[in-house]
Image (tube, rainbow, N blue to C red; front, side):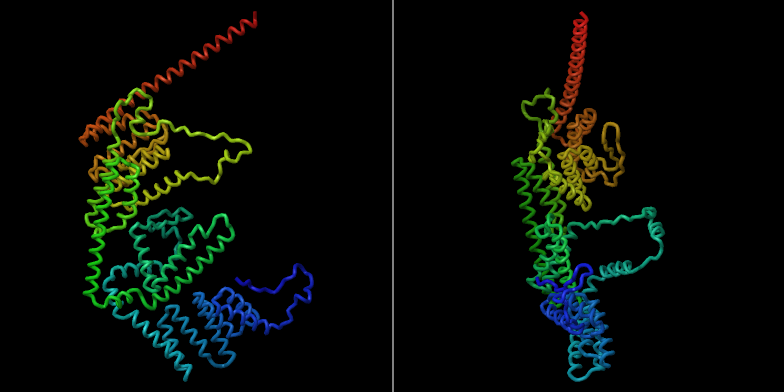
Length: 603
């Protein structure tokens, strides 16, 4: 990239050497800068062109041709409001200098109004200039009038009538939203908030984050692609590339502090320029006009839409059958982790984007998937053969929990960097769990069916349990069971009473199986912390649910857990008593030895 040439500067108050001085007059420098600006403008180097044209205007502010050239450059850079101001200033200066209006500058004003999507003002300006100019100058304005009349006819013709008749309710809603945005309330903020029933004391207002449903995100993404495909054909992928470029970590490297900021600004600026030009195209030829011209025959268009709907429904039905088949295969193979991962991918990435119109029997499909997963989870809760009830960690083995969570601590060695923990090091497992929790919580906001909420709360509890956050695990499991009022035990001395707005999810979906699995999560969280009484209460809650399921294996499992919990309590007490007796014996022996040593010293 060619650098911008500046006049050399001398440090301090030293006199400028002769070889640094430029002996040209201001008029010559003005012409040089204007020519450089014109050259870079033709080369589509708008930044350099604006730089030199500004320097030319600094030397000669009343040069209307320089203003005209800067107006054209700003039009290429999508700076339409600045271009309109420059063209009007140039027209005034030209009238003062020559005593008459210049057709080129007036035509430029009409073009800028047209590019600002002010078609009525552009047409009025064209007709006014047609009365002033004649001959070949008038022909340019006549050609522009034909173009503007055609655009107005396309925008306000039969296509708009058809579009508004189909989307009248949506248009009214959008109109009301735009009116609300235009209203300016001059009252103090506390008065406005008080009328709305909000907090009028908080000085800094919280910025509400806009949460979009997965279906809305997919709709906007598809609308973005269709919009650019309609106007740019195969070049639409370049616009998508420019949009993703500003967020690409391969371009914005974190270790490149200065260049990342510059690259982000330039990529964002160029993308904004493209978006402005796309809005111009959409204003001249709206998307409803494109669809109207494409589908002139309504009967044929409806047949095409119906055939496309049937194809999508058929393909969705085939995908549903394939998913159910794969889930049954994974359940039969007892690959529980792969099954849970597959269900989360299918239900979180595919099913949430399908409506009941496209995915027929959607509710039944969701029930089948989640119930199959619940059955696979329940099949893991079995008492193995030759199980030893007397071991200290018997209940943890029954619940398939790790019996030893002691981490290997690496001793720090001075001078050995491999033993030092990096401050910026991230745990991949913790990052994956954090992303999964955020994904599940977002799905929980837009979940529609109670059985889906039971699944999401169970997965949240399991993720928190894997990360060692037992209080959060118990909290989410109880949300699926009780819902109305939940107690979170942060420690043995502190408890918080939270009121929740979620209903009894497991009761609404009439699923005792998910209720049982949620109780098992509470049992796991309490058992791993050796909370014997709370584990006993949770197991007593799980036993009647297991009997309602009419499964003898689950009943045996719960009864065995109760026995192990009691045996675990006895063994723990014996261990504590033995440790206390041993410590007392050691203390008495040490005291006896000390007394004997004292007596020997005295003797």
